[in-house]
Image 1 (cartoon, helix red, strand yellow):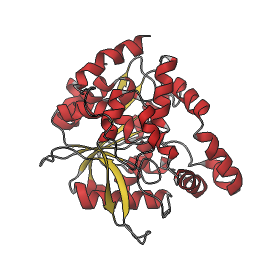
Image 2 (cartoon, rainbow, N blue to C red):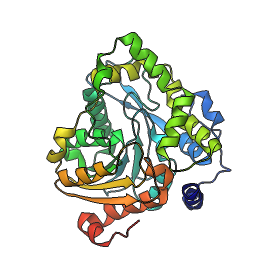
Image 3 (cartoon, helix red, strand yellow):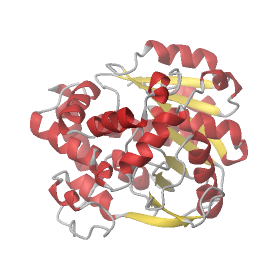
Image 4 (spheres, rainbow, N blue to C red):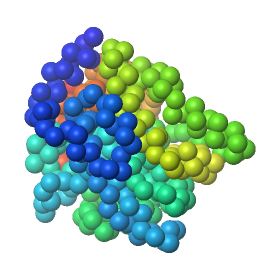
Length: 333
């Protein structure tokens, strides 16, 4: 129960007012958002908005979901991606800590996941995801980012940094899923079978099991509520089509690009990650030209949910003091 106790200690630091207007959710969120109990997820959900993004592969602008910073500064912003088939709600505990630290912070939903309006379904393959993110950056962020990618979001971040280096000042990769060869054999499945698999992907039992694998030790009630948070975007009517499109497109395969990354990089890894071995953290550290590595003890696959205080501290130090200073001065976690 150490992990749960630590999380309970960390959450009050977020200074989120649980008694605030938590029912003022955007109208585009699935109505099941009202079933979520976590006050931090509810608070962040009230801040999700859609911004129009024009892309070459869609006739109309895509109303793209994100959490926009309350204040934009002249400093390089921190931009948070999320993991496979997830949303910006992953950052419900860490986002307010980063804002509290004075960082301009964005949380972006990757095209095909999250809460964007995909009624006229565009392509959701790797090239489309990259183009969509670039146009979002070009329209709204406009400054070189400290780009944070957890799990598969690390592959998204590496792919983006290689193709648009001018948009990325530094990278932060967390429990990075960067050695998978795309979606593998799933790309060759008949579409009918792919749809059956996607239907299973959003099921409560599977998501609940994934939560038990992802975190070191959580209660059933917490796991169930976090399951409702994690699958909320799956209840949008276009989610299945977008998921199948990504699956059959082949997905991300960035292994050969890792050594091409030129940005200073911070690698963060949960010591008890049961999804992706921390041995791969060492391999990633060796392959990246300019990287440091920090391991978070008694933490699983999603540190920004399980250890938000540690993650926020590492991100803030990396942003404010630079790679060299962090490498010399960052405390062991």
